[in-house]
Image (cartoon, rainbow, N blue to C red; front, side, top):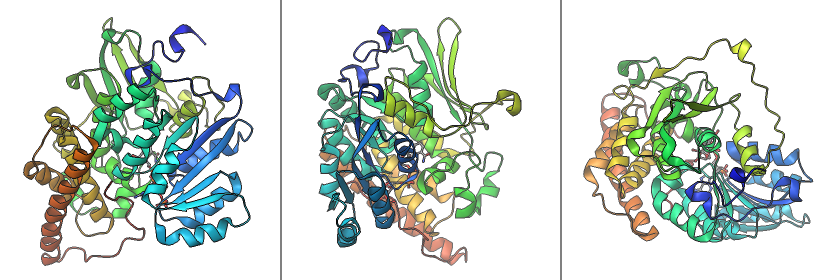
Amino acid sequence: MTESTMPGRGTPAPVRAARHPGGAARGTRRVTVLGSTGSVGDSTLDLIGRNRDAYRVVALTAFRNVEKLIAQALDLRPELAVIGDPDLHDRLAEGLRGSGVRSEAGASALIAAAAEPADLVVAGIVGAAGLAPTMEAVRNGRAVALANKECLVCAGPLMTALAAERGAALLPVDSEHNAIFQVFDHERPENVERIVLTASGGPFRRCSLAEMRDVTVEQAVNHPVWSMGDKISIDSATMMNKGLELIEAHCLFPVAQDRIEVLIHPQSIVHSMVAYRDGSVLAQLGTPDMRTPIAFALAWPERMAAPVAPLDLARIGSLTFEPADEARFPALRLAREAMAAGGTAPTILNAANEVAVAAFLARRIGFLDIAAIVEETLQRAETDAAGSLEEVWAVDRRARTLATQAMLVREDSRAGAGAGQPVPSSKPSAVASMS
Ligand SMILES: NC(=O)c1ccc[n+]([C@@H]2O[C@H](COP(=O)([O-])OP(=O)(O)OC[C@H]3O[C@@H](n4cnc5c(N)ncnc54)[C@H](OP(=O)(O)O)[C@@H]3O)[C@@H](O)[C@H]2O)c1
């Protein structure tokens, strides 16, 4: 380990005060996985399952997928398994009877799980629902492998300030931010000229607005490169995902907003880049597989083997890049505007987007309605300074009410126009108010 990779030296602001969380090479590392039944959870448990001597699972959490949680717990034998929906506690307890795994349920149990003694907490819950448990992990000084970008969008300054105060490392797992983390000169940030976030462009990269009007849920969740949960897949299709990532990058790295750019790169091989003032541009490349950034966080500051296909650039042949089009993807513009407005504007943006994405997944509104609802909510909600978590929660609730009103108007006019009758979603909504 060189001096510049040692925790506490040459590390970025959110990580600077971090205690060394252990490391696979230093003995068994205790890991809690919040959102273990999701896509990030699956990838995390796959890595842990292949390295059972190096990792001990402390707690696993899910929201409603109790059968999958039971199967994971019986396989990995954590100390604790928590289901968010209290109505499912009996089934969880029954499924774990005799296994030695404790079971709990409900919102406060999810938060308590994040506070269990652990070296690393993987924040893999989707949406603002993950904010309270992730904050609890930070409050307890845990190193956090942060996949849940909505946490930073809702309450970035509060979370990074608390992380610095409590010595909690924030290790970005989003592949773009993980890439930046790996090539950023944390020791001398003044040498960084700009950050370039790459984006695949999603399934509708080449579509006109008219073509996007009638896209179906199935088309929108069908990402050309990444296999992910429904919510982030829709965010990728609208490009709100890249907008949320702009705000996330601004929270994690000391770079001015106007120096964070988005570049479309359909192959998703270059995961992001950092440009320096001498003209050097450093990038992190790899096969698009979330197990690479998750492995980075699990082993940090060491490295571990990951079962990822080696990058074969000769086979791929060419890497292409093109500018992002904010006219066809207004969500990107809205996120940039919310970031510039600051205060609670990003909280409003995120809440409205969660409401709109859930409504689209439930087939109540059209694809283009998502950005329209977010824009209308941002116009109607009052933006304030985000002084405390309580204020963030209050703003989140108000924004959800306004967004729901905007959604219902669109649902009515769609039904009036004879477009798509409401059909129940095949999955329960994965997004919920954070409070
Ligand atoms: N998937 C990726 O490749 C990827 C890449 C980069 C960043 N991320 C970020 O990582 C986060 C997770 O994404 P994902 O794709 O893994 O999502 P996902 O597949 O939908 O999984 C979400 C997880 O959160 C749990 N959950 C949902 N609502 C909850 C609630 N109200 N309270 C507590 N737990 C709840 C789910 O439990 P149930 O299964 O029981 O519903 C599940 O375990 C998101 O913030 C996303 O933006 C994901």
